[in-house]
Length: 141
Image 1: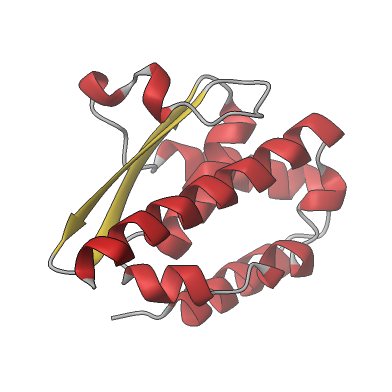
Image 2 (image 1 turned 45 degrees about the vertical axis):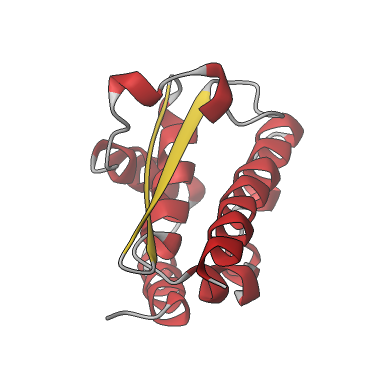
């Protein structure tokens, strides 16, 4: 199984292949197309990430001590952002998610290339993913 760190390293490598941010945005849009899409029944108010200007839904379930995330967004860039986060944090143990660093976001330069509202949304998405991890970890204890 790939660790969170390994996946983050892969993403840093992938982003370093592109010369400019237009290419990186296109890549993020492509990543958004491969996002494990949330089931329609979970597209509810409860699963909306607060603090995002576009709508982002994230659903999490625990299977065999690992959290599986699905998500969707009504904006293509935001869909790419959540796709990156899900790639990193899905199929991982709650404790690993809680203890993981999100430095890779700074290393690929994502936050500085987002509008302030998108950057806030990114922070909110990470918070929500970590909150799911905390909730599921307490179930496992």
